Structures are given as C-alpha cells and as structure tokens.
Image (tube, rainbow, N blue to C red; front, side):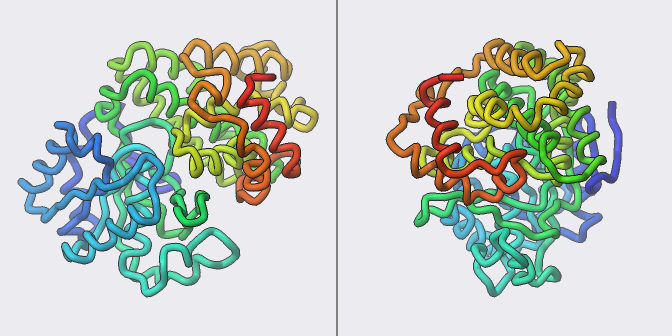
Length: 383
C-alpha cells in the first residue's frame, strides 16, 4: 500500500509513514519546526508520539494548538507570535482542516512585513508576500475531508467582519504531504461522515464547474467513485485501514481537482461557518442536494454522465437520490435547523454567498435572492 508520488506535491502515502517526519524535515533543512494542530489532537497519544519521534531525532520541535475548529485571524496571529519567539524555521501542519489551514497561514505570514489579510485571494494580493521568506511546510492530515494538505490557500475567519477569507500564495502548497491512514483510525464515525462528505463536495463541485480543465475533471470523477465505494465502510468500520487510506487519497484528489473551482455549496458554507461556527464538512453535506437542485438546469447532462460512471441510474434524479441515500446512511441531517441554524439571517447569507469567491465558478451565477432561497430551503428541509 505504501507509495510515493509527486502530484501536486511530494506525497508519501501508507501506514506508519508519519515516522519519517525527521527525515523529511532534514530534506527541507528544517531543524526547529513548529507543529500546528488543534487542542483535541494535542492531547492524544498520536501527537505525543510524533513529537517524541522528532525530538529523539534531534529536532527542536514545539507545539501550538490554540486554534478553533474554524480558525480565526486571532488564532493565526497567536501562532505567528509563538513561531517568532521560538525561532522556528518550518511548520508541520497536523490535523484536520483547522490544523492544516492555520499551520499554512502561520507559515505564509510569519516572516512577512505585511499582514496576513494583505494576502487575501483578491487580484494579485499574493504578490505582497516575499516568497523567499516563506518557510517549508509539511502537512499531515488526520481527517479525510478538506484536502488542505495539497492546497495553496487557507480559509480563515475574519472575526471583525464575520466572514471567512481565503488566504492564498502558491508557496502555501506544502513541500511534502504524509498520508498515513493509521492517524485517521480513531476519528469518530460522525466526523468521518462529515469530513468524507466534505471531500465529496470538493470533487463534485470541481466536476460541475464550467471552467475548462479536463485533468481536474478526470480526477474529480475518480475521487467521487472512491468516496462512493469507501466512505460508508470508513464510517461504519473505522478500523478498516484500506478504507481509511482510500478516503485520504480521495480527499487530496478533491482539493487537487478544485483547481477547476468550487460552487454554491462552498459559497454558502463559508458565511454559514463564519456566522454560526458550524462544522464546514457538515454544512456542505447538508447543503449538497439543495445546491444540486438549484443548478439542475445546467448540470443535468454532466451529472447523468457521472451517474453512468458510478453505475447508478444514469440521470440527474438517480445521482440526486444516491446523494440523499448516502446522507441518510451516514447519519447526516436533512436540514440546517438540525444543527441549530435558523432563518433569521438568510437574506444576509444570500448576499454574502454572492460575494464569496466560490460563487464565481458555480454552474449558474445565482443572485443574492436565489442563494437566499437555497439556504432558506436548507433550513426548512424543503427539496
């Protein structure tokens, strides 16, 4: 099962590959890494084992874990302070989307004279950073969902503005990724389901994007097939190493594929996550059928083609029913109300969705009123 490949970056996949962390740091001339993770993982043996392995190899490693499930600008700034005070020369981003995104954001901004917000993915803002001052990043995902380990951006909550901002720089792409399925075995079934559906949303929105990118489209199709075959097993038998490995790969495939763009699921999930601090993967999972239906007139033909490849009923309705059945099988709620979201701010959410960068590659350029209807339907559970 162990393998190495170099797309879109250096990837080391297989059981116990995390034990190679010291060797990988040496390859990048990193002697004093800051390991960035979340508070839950910081308390687990898997994290202490990695730290101990690194220390025994002579690395001056420290841990920063003061981050929220939806990382904030304040979290990143705290991490930058720790990075600078510790004299670190690289970042190990360890965990789910929060640890990975926060770690990458800390790395890109730690040595810059500009603010992290000056690197928001608008126009050529990334040119504000000096690439020579961005330290090496090594990414180790412990969930199979965001695919942030192979991404060139981080999603960070701008607290003052109550929105999620995408921080971007090409050198935010980690220099090396470790996909070790053993690190995901202990993930609870509920989180395995939510993160797995997040991986599905990435592959699916990339597939539905109107942009011309046949390579990304091909990766997305296969990523969806892998999720169809292995996500239920990973949820219901978390000790299945093959299913865990396949889902890690499908997650990385999704983030590779969305070079083609995302869409309405993310355009709504970003503001919903910023306002309600809800789990990003769960939001995408709940929103998925509502956005598919809103886009049906444009995506009917490609979705029918995808359904044939997945050996489903070969039409839009067959694929939609598979999504609905998959959600039910995994215990995903049918509506946003089930996770404590009401319709008090649906108009505001519609306006925020239009402004979100993900909306630009939705198959239909919905206006704020249309996004308001979508989120309103998702709150009430009206398909």
